[in-house]
Image (tube, rainbow over the protein chains, first blue to last red):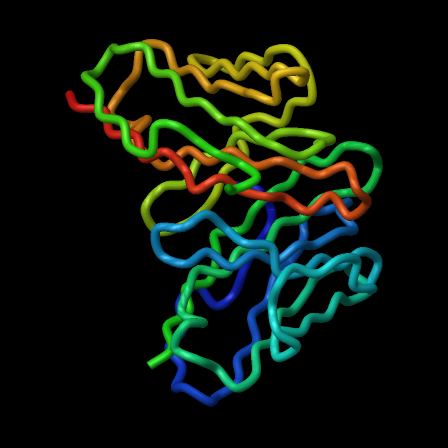
Length: 113
Length: 110
């Protein structure tokens, strides 16, 4: 086990609703990155949080937002859900100490109907 | 063209065979990761390397920075090795986000 925990593991939402996904980081890690993995595709970078600040963002609309807390856990919020938001959402924790090794959670599978 | 290309996309082999999965990338990187993803989604980090070669059990990963190419080898493959293997690169442009390949689906037949 990596020590990175995501919740919930599965979620079904209706189009137009809002969702919050959660990620606890590995002990000692101060950076959390979120990725979206559509079926049959490689994960795509959504954004990264470092010490509670957004530190880079991929090509995702503003309705994808995030937070990082003082204990370095993180949330991903998605507003106005669309059918295409159905995917596996992965978080990865790492530490900006020169090593870029990342530890992944098990993911949250979101289905939008 | 994707920044990270993997080959093959699908690979089926008999138990015991030597497996090679290739990864080519087109951007500058600080590190390259090999990851394993089983059905259900969870990703496990196998290797992170920025030069040379690393070995862990039956798994070997190599990288050639000049050629922007990496390989993952599995010796004495076993059905439990069946999974999707993903190559991901960490850019050297600040935020170290990972850019992923689309993965290689490996199936080992007993």
